[in-house]
Length: 232
Image 1 (tube, one colour):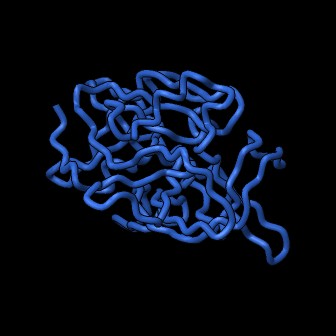
Image 2 (cartoon, helix red, strand yellow):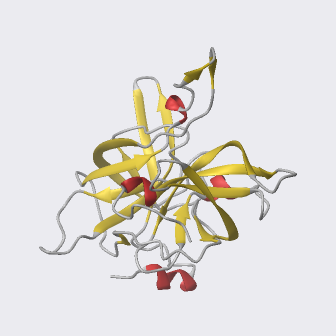
Image 3 (cartoon, rainbow, N blue to C red):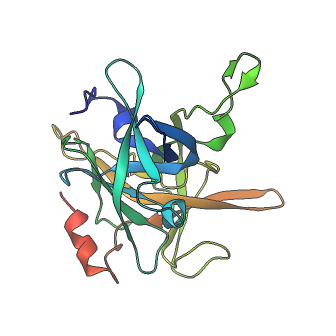
């Protein structure tokens, strides 16, 4: 059983990594794939971007958690369920840990001016730590915020799907799969964070730089089994 400080953001918004099994049975880190986040009351199901897990084989990828000693612990991915049309996928984790999370998928439709916050693991800070004159890879959780510029219901170049929120902030590579969370309060007394989107990429054109998230409000429109993820 994992010993995790369950009140830490870093343990419900996590890095997705490629791994290898060593001869001694240990798990070795091979590189970052993206970000993911646990969904409330699902017992170990996380969401990420489809393209983050598109090419992985089961047994070759894991999600990292920070234990009570401050050490990264890898939990293997035992199943991936890819959405049939949008750039989003479910990750099922191989563990008996309960994986509590305050993140709940929102059915509410969101439009321009909606304020949001985001946590993810940007590639821009992946090589910051230098040990013995060498910069190694170390995922680090970073906060971002902004507002929804517009709601899009058509296909975009290079991004899978057709149902998006255009965001005012570019969060960058490595943040694919991160939760886009409403900054509007929910009912008093409830520690629930409403997820309105999954960050999937960005577009730059001249001075314009915007981010994109697959919107969550109708993620089950062409995937009925995904309705079970709306946990209230």
